[in-house]
Length: 166
Image (cartoon, one colour):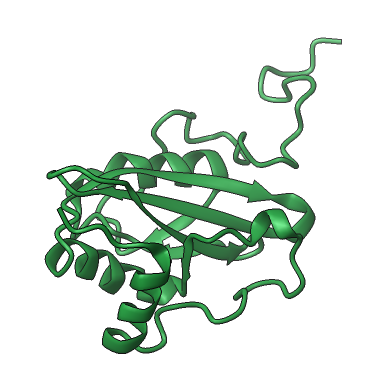
Protein backbone atom coordinates (compact mmCIF):
# COMPACT_ATOMS: atom_id res chain seq x y z
CA UNK A 1 0.00 0.00 0.00
CA UNK A 2 1.51 3.31 -1.01
CA UNK A 3 1.57 5.83 1.79
CA UNK A 4 1.69 9.44 0.77
CA UNK A 5 2.15 12.30 3.17
CA UNK A 6 0.55 15.71 2.64
CA UNK A 7 4.02 17.12 1.89
CA UNK A 8 4.72 14.43 -0.73
CA UNK A 9 1.31 15.03 -2.31
CA UNK A 10 1.92 18.80 -2.26
CA UNK A 11 5.17 18.28 -4.22
CA UNK A 12 3.62 15.77 -6.61
CA UNK A 13 0.64 18.01 -7.36
CA UNK A 14 2.95 20.99 -7.79
CA UNK A 15 4.68 19.07 -10.58
CA UNK A 16 1.64 17.38 -12.15
CA UNK A 17 -1.09 20.01 -11.62
CA UNK A 18 0.59 23.42 -11.38
CA UNK A 19 -1.54 25.97 -9.56
CA UNK A 20 -3.64 23.41 -7.68
CA UNK A 21 -1.94 23.79 -4.31
CA UNK A 22 -2.82 27.01 -2.49
CA UNK A 23 0.51 28.70 -1.80
CA UNK A 24 -1.11 31.13 0.64
CA UNK A 25 -4.54 31.11 2.13
CA UNK A 26 -6.92 31.91 -0.73
CA UNK A 27 -9.32 33.92 1.42
CA UNK A 28 -7.63 35.50 4.44
CA UNK A 29 -4.01 36.31 5.22
CA UNK A 30 -2.64 35.93 8.76
CA UNK A 31 -4.87 33.16 10.05
CA UNK A 32 -4.34 31.82 13.57
CA UNK A 33 -2.12 28.79 13.99
CA UNK A 34 -5.00 26.36 14.57
CA UNK A 35 -6.15 26.93 10.97
CA UNK A 36 -2.70 26.28 9.55
CA UNK A 37 -2.61 22.49 9.67
CA UNK A 38 -0.33 20.17 7.76
CA UNK A 39 -3.21 19.02 5.57
CA UNK A 40 -3.18 19.84 1.89
CA UNK A 41 -4.99 23.07 1.03
CA UNK A 42 -5.92 23.41 -2.62
CA UNK A 43 -7.55 26.05 -4.79
CA UNK A 44 -11.30 25.43 -5.16
CA UNK A 45 -11.23 25.50 -8.97
CA UNK A 46 -8.79 22.60 -9.00
CA UNK A 47 -10.84 20.35 -6.70
CA UNK A 48 -12.24 17.99 -9.37
CA UNK A 49 -8.85 17.56 -11.04
CA UNK A 50 -7.13 16.90 -7.71
CA UNK A 51 -9.82 14.41 -6.64
CA UNK A 52 -9.58 12.52 -9.95
CA UNK A 53 -5.78 12.56 -9.63
CA UNK A 54 -5.99 11.14 -6.11
CA UNK A 55 -8.28 8.38 -7.38
CA UNK A 56 -6.74 7.52 -10.76
CA UNK A 57 -3.04 8.10 -10.10
CA UNK A 58 -2.68 7.42 -6.37
CA UNK A 59 -5.38 4.76 -6.01
CA UNK A 60 -7.44 6.38 -3.24
CA UNK A 61 -10.77 5.04 -4.47
CA UNK A 62 -12.97 5.71 -1.45
CA UNK A 63 -14.23 9.21 -0.68
CA UNK A 64 -15.34 8.73 2.90
CA UNK A 65 -16.91 12.08 3.67
CA UNK A 66 -17.04 15.79 3.04
CA UNK A 67 -17.28 18.01 6.10
CA UNK A 68 -18.06 21.73 6.11
CA UNK A 69 -16.67 23.97 8.85
CA UNK A 70 -17.82 27.54 9.44
CA UNK A 71 -15.14 29.99 10.57
CA UNK A 72 -17.41 32.97 11.13
CA UNK A 73 -14.68 35.16 12.67
CA UNK A 74 -12.58 34.75 9.52
CA UNK A 75 -15.50 34.90 7.06
CA UNK A 76 -14.73 31.58 5.43
CA UNK A 77 -15.92 28.02 5.07
CA UNK A 78 -13.55 25.10 4.99
CA UNK A 79 -14.47 21.88 3.22
CA UNK A 80 -12.60 18.79 4.35
CA UNK A 81 -12.45 15.83 1.94
CA UNK A 82 -11.27 12.51 3.37
CA UNK A 83 -10.03 9.80 0.98
CA UNK A 84 -8.98 6.22 1.75
CA UNK A 85 -7.02 3.58 -0.09
CA UNK A 86 -8.86 0.26 -0.01
CA UNK A 87 -5.63 -1.64 0.64
CA UNK A 88 -5.32 0.18 3.95
CA UNK A 89 -3.11 2.87 5.34
CA UNK A 90 -3.81 6.33 6.60
CA UNK A 91 -6.42 8.61 5.17
CA UNK A 92 -5.65 11.45 2.80
CA UNK A 93 -7.16 14.81 3.74
CA UNK A 94 -7.65 17.59 1.24
CA UNK A 95 -9.08 20.98 2.24
CA UNK A 96 -10.66 23.78 0.28
CA UNK A 97 -11.50 27.21 1.71
CA UNK A 98 -14.07 29.59 0.26
CA UNK A 99 -15.39 32.98 1.38
CA UNK A 100 -18.68 32.99 3.32
CA UNK A 101 -20.18 35.71 1.12
CA UNK A 102 -19.90 33.55 -2.05
CA UNK A 103 -19.34 29.94 -1.03
CA UNK A 104 -19.02 28.06 -4.31
CA UNK A 105 -17.02 24.91 -5.01
CA UNK A 106 -17.05 22.61 -8.06
CA UNK A 107 -19.03 19.44 -7.45
CA UNK A 108 -17.30 16.07 -7.20
CA UNK A 109 -20.55 14.18 -7.83
CA UNK A 110 -19.93 13.75 -11.60
CA UNK A 111 -16.61 12.04 -10.76
CA UNK A 112 -17.45 10.53 -7.35
CA UNK A 113 -21.17 9.63 -7.20
CA UNK A 114 -20.79 9.05 -3.45
CA UNK A 115 -20.24 12.80 -2.97
CA UNK A 116 -23.89 13.51 -3.83
CA UNK A 117 -25.48 13.42 -0.38
CA UNK A 118 -22.52 15.06 1.38
CA UNK A 119 -22.64 17.98 -1.05
CA UNK A 120 -26.41 18.32 -0.69
CA UNK A 121 -26.02 18.33 3.08
CA UNK A 122 -23.40 21.14 2.95
CA UNK A 123 -25.66 23.06 0.56
CA UNK A 124 -28.72 22.66 2.77
CA UNK A 125 -27.14 23.32 6.16
CA UNK A 126 -24.36 25.81 5.26
CA UNK A 127 -25.46 27.33 1.93
CA UNK A 128 -22.37 26.20 0.02
CA UNK A 129 -23.09 25.89 -3.71
CA UNK A 130 -21.56 22.98 -5.63
CA UNK A 131 -21.41 24.01 -9.27
CA UNK A 132 -22.09 21.16 -11.66
CA UNK A 133 -24.06 19.11 -9.12
CA UNK A 134 -26.84 17.25 -10.96
CA UNK A 135 -29.55 17.74 -8.28
CA UNK A 136 -28.56 20.37 -5.74
CA UNK A 137 -31.70 20.54 -3.59
CA UNK A 138 -32.27 20.72 0.14
CA UNK A 139 -32.03 17.35 1.84
CA UNK A 140 -33.01 17.98 5.49
CA UNK A 141 -34.73 21.36 5.70
CA UNK A 142 -37.93 22.43 4.02
CA UNK A 143 -37.66 24.48 0.83
CA UNK A 144 -39.24 27.59 2.37
CA UNK A 145 -36.66 27.84 5.16
CA UNK A 146 -34.82 31.13 4.89
CA UNK A 147 -31.23 30.46 5.87
CA UNK A 148 -28.90 27.62 6.70
CA UNK A 149 -29.09 26.30 10.28
CA UNK A 150 -25.47 25.15 10.68
CA UNK A 151 -24.06 28.60 9.97
CA UNK A 152 -22.78 30.15 13.17
CA UNK A 153 -24.77 33.34 12.53
CA UNK A 154 -28.10 31.52 12.12
CA UNK A 155 -30.60 32.68 14.79
CA UNK A 156 -30.68 30.08 17.56
CA UNK A 157 -33.60 31.34 19.65
CA UNK A 158 -37.24 31.20 18.77
CA UNK A 159 -38.73 29.90 15.59
CA UNK A 160 -39.90 32.60 13.23
CA UNK A 161 -41.16 29.86 10.91
CA UNK A 162 -43.93 28.73 13.26
CA UNK A 163 -45.63 32.11 13.24
CA UNK A 164 -45.98 34.82 15.81
CA UNK A 165 -47.73 33.23 18.76
CA UNK A 166 -47.51 36.09 21.24
